[in-house]
Amino acid sequence: MITHISLENWRAYRNLELDVDPGTTFLVAANGVGKSSLLEAVRWALGAGQVEQRPSMVRQGHDRASVSVTLAVPEGELAITRSLKVARSRLTAETTATLDGRAVEPAGAVRLLEGSWSADARFVSRTAFLTEDLRRDGDDPNLRTHLCRAYSLDDLQRAIAEIEPVLSQLSRSLKASRAELSGTHDQLREAAEELAALTAGVAGAREAVESARAAHAQAGAELDVARAAGALRTAAATWRDSRERLVALAVPVVGPVRADGPLADTLVEAETRLAAEVDAIRSQQAALRSRLEAAETSLATLHVAGASCPVCLRELDDDSRGRAEHLHTATLESVRADLAALDDASAAVSLDTVRQLAREAASLGPAPAVPGNDDLDARIEAEAAALAVLEAAVAGQREAELKAQAMLTKVESIRTDIAAADALTEQYRAEALLEAGKAALHQTVTAVLGRQLEPLAAEVNRRWEAVFPDRPNLHLTPDGELSRVIDGAPLEFGAFSAGEQTVAKLMMRLTTLLATTTVPFCWIDEPLEHLDPVSRQLVGSTLAHLSAAGGLEQIFVTTYEEPLARRLAELQPGRVRVQYLRTEPAR
Image 1 (cartoon, rainbow, N blue to C red):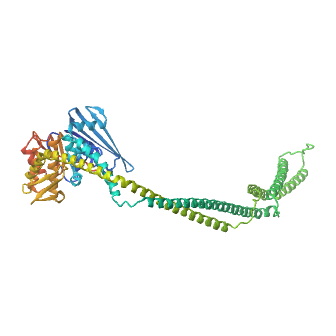
Image 2 (cartoon, rainbow, N blue to C red):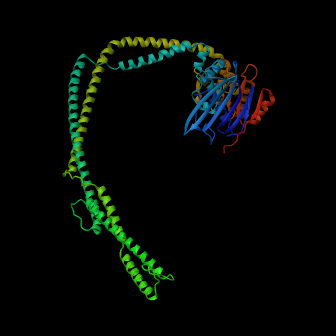
């Protein structure tokens, strides 16, 4: 029995901790709150691989959800936890399990459950849960397989399963052999001769392909040479343009440049000459500045009181001081005029320009060789023509190979026909024996299941008629198919109304669980919503009473029919309860 459910970030649930009691529980909530999501979570956790995983199972704004279901089994308390992670729309599920707090392998947990339930997990997932997708899905629980297991008919079913692929293969072989076997030895000889001729044609076609491939390779190599020559000519033209640009920039600075001379050497020589000129100017400027400084110093000395002659050291009179001042002033003017006449700026600019041009000329390097002219367009046309010849040769080879392969297939077919003619009689005998064996086994299984199913089918019909007394004769086959007989004619399940389909599937599941398994619970999603008021009351009462002694230990029903659920709980306090559900909206 399920005792506890824990959800985290599952659909609308941020966190949910829910204890589940024995008896019948009506989980009441408005539409859209998350009733169906709760059942889906439990079924997903217990039936790994039985419920399709979708990104919408994870609460909006989160990348991981987890569901933990705790069950009471004969071995102790079994807790199964499954988590679902979303990363770039990729879903990853992981399962862990504990038994009385000790970790167990997920596969071991499934074996514990199947042993406790006396049924395999897939059957329980589709029988002990009735959700909206199972209500719509035509793939109902495989009742025949389950009953064969329950009544120890597995060996017969395995024998049928082993016969079927062998019989299917044999039937396909016979179907092919039933066609007219027209192959003869004369036809085989003629086909073999034609095959030999076609094979020789294939060899010739392959030689033609190799020849065309060599011609295409040669044309491609010549085209590559022509393209390389074109690239060299382009490089030479670029070099000439660059040299002409440098010459045009150099002429205003260094004068005429030889058209075919070494431009870099000419510019280096000019750079050396200009550097010497700049150095000479700057040396003259330094000498003049020294003279200027000396004259200024001497003139300043004359203005000092008691100035004396620097040679005889006698004190200068006014006339001597005046003549000295005149001489120093004249010297200053002369030196300043000479210093102003010496301008190194233009020479320095010319030097920088020539130095930059010399570096560019050096990086330009020698003139590239200019190859002879080659007709590139003609080489392109020649390569394209060679490629067309090669493609035609390959197509011819392929056509020759296909014809040869078709003829080889024809030869093999004729040989097969000749061999099949001898084996056909024996194949028919083997098919007949297999068909008879399969039919006998199937009839045996059907007969045994029919006898065993009679009380189960009768109980399903009894529960059905308790809800729909005016619509009797619900029929259940060993394959799990449901129908009704009306005036001697069968009414297929697909023609049932939505409410009838829900009740029929519900009664079949409840009865099957009680009669053929030891599964203690059944979880049902909104079984009352598609029914008229009377049928709703009858189905609700049935679910309430089925959790009594001799019935299922636990029935869990989701509904928004609160008044009906409360009335049933009031009639059977302690065994029937109403539980309310609320979820926190996603932010």
